[in-house]
Length: 318
Image (cartoon, rainbow, N blue to C red; front, side, top):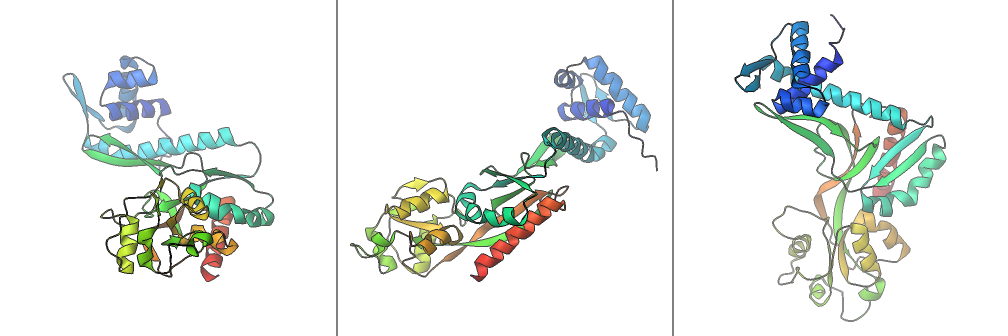
């Protein structure tokens, strides 16, 4: 097998022209002339011995061979870009860039991170709290939409709250999530009473916008239906975009929050929060450990992933 690559400039010219279906627009993107793009494409066609474009008056279209090779070519350019970024950011130290959903970073990861740092002093851990979605980049080419080049915004590993459907990544489930009402102990023992789920009618319901069941009704509506409590106005109450903020509001006595129990666990153990009722509901969403397939088996990523799973097992058995 001939492992010699075609000229990279020709490959790049072809990829950009295929994306735009225009030599002129490709020339603008690459800051060259349309004639230079045409020359590079012709050189590539001669090299591979296959036509890549059909010329149609003032338009061009991809051949079947071109459409078939584009996804792998684009993935290859993405890999090259990731490798170049790794070289640019490498400073000679043994670093591990971790991106974590904001509330999980605050309420779960940070109180226990010292255990990983103590066990792995050689690893320079860099934590970034983020709720950005996993970027599975897509581009449209003739004939449909093709998935290419997933990215993690420079992170070696991240933890996200979702369905776990991240094509192109290595994905491991960290732990499932259940939600239950929590509140300040002062609120639980004051008037009006908070002894039965029906008593929620007399209390402020704190809304956590990150909790999602199926989109047909609010999270509070789901819990109240499971508790057998009708006729509660779940549209009222302050709303928060992060679970950690909703938990702080509950701990300060603002009202009752419906919260992921894994995030409330440290505040429950410290007595800042209590669960007035035993009923908890599982969510479809869970927390997942996500890493690029190219980095999933590197020593630092593997060590951090194994440690996360150990901590999750400790929580579930505790």
